[in-house]
Length: 72
Image (cartoon, rainbow, N blue to C red):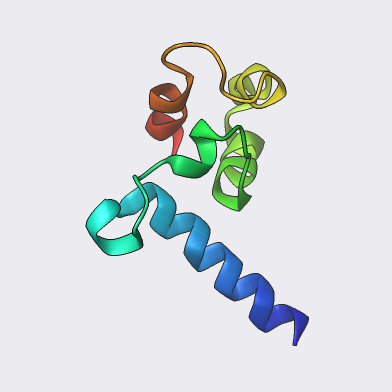
């Protein structure tokens, strides 16, 4: 059961990066704008350590959300 929930959450997280408001009912990247480091961002951090400061400051500086998008 937990694997199913985790899978559904990962799909939701990926859609947040790849889909727009028409698909999700919320703007793309909404989780990052809320300061949430979701699964895809955390996995990308493993390959891109420069994301660490962005995650630590919860993507609050101007351009942080757009910069993370380049790593995903």
